[in-house]
Length: 373
Image (cartoon, rainbow, N blue to C red; front, side, top):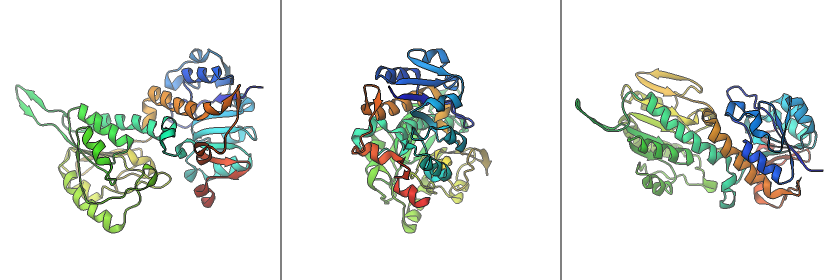
């Protein structure tokens, strides 16, 4: 009997993405699986039910969907109520953020759910096409640049008008991962002068290739896995002293620095904000994990001493069509090699499968999460 794979409607407030778009759902069907889609699952991402008609079966409600599903695809981590609906021994793929959802992890373990936290996929060359963090960061980096331009009190590009020449805005971008690089590219396209900072020296080449100037603080925090390590107190102070000068001259600051599974590092201090020009703006992409700016209020946009401080949440959801399509491709690239004749056969010797697993056979197999529980 072919595996039954299911796509429920996302129920977290404000979430507009869907785990599989119609194209990827159809591609799964072509592998021989039975595809189940909850009615209305794709509506908020502008995929009406009829677009899933090629091979997928529409299910009236979530309870009926979960009752049949062998594999469930989600964007957001399931609520405890959704976990209860999962069939014992079934498989779940989602961005689970286990460090924030320990009760959920315990229930997944107790129900013997095989769960994969898509954000845990190792950052190796072979897994780039499966990297959910990168695909969603690309969406977020583009959107955050537009948000900064919208909130800024002046034009991003230089304008030559009958009333005189208007100088371009100066933008400082902190963090040159996928989101930061996308923000650099977008701000440059909008005509701004861009400086960027990253604690990894290897980021210089990428920053400069996009036409931005690298801010050199003399601090290196290169680490394994493509992420940065935590800085020492002395390194943080050295970093802050150099950054403060550049931030004070900026019209807009975009922060994107994050450490998976931990609170975002505080890079922009209250003193730095108070040293900024009136009319300047800070957009903190790391607000979801506490923010890179000391004054960030997650989910709020407000003014502090004439500086606008924005802490937007779940930015990829604001561009639901491309974000859903990219996420769906990540899921397909992750799981499709394990589907043979419509059946799912997980290869636990595969590094990507093994390292992205959260729970399996009644155990929490992700060691950092196991220690928290």
